Image (cartoon, rainbow, N blue to C red; front, side, top):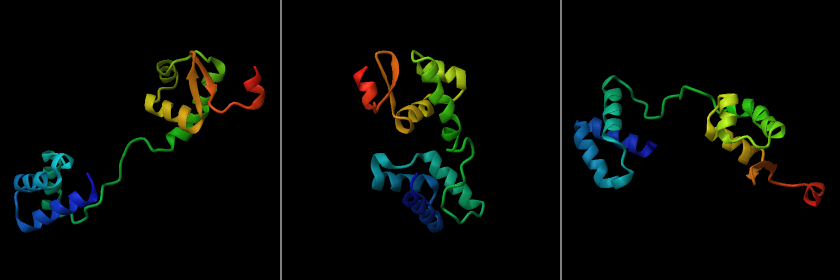
Length: 129
């Protein structure tokens, strides 16, 4: 949910509209991009409980830095066994497949070619092999 929609929810709350009325108005304005009815209800509950801030709460869970911590392990696996699949890497490290994909492709620039993990950018000596 974006900041603008939360601001509109708060505006309707201050006007005394119900969350159902607010959601219907927002559907007219935002169409398919409108937030879910449950989200409008959740924000109404927050405002009823005295909340004034419309910014997101701090997110809990795994920090984004876990990619950095796991990058070394993910980097070493294709060097040990170039035939490993995403699922096998996931089973051995216990991290999300999306994180594995991000580490391999975005951070380490390697890709799977003919069932082998190879560096995406080859040096001149590797090109001649």
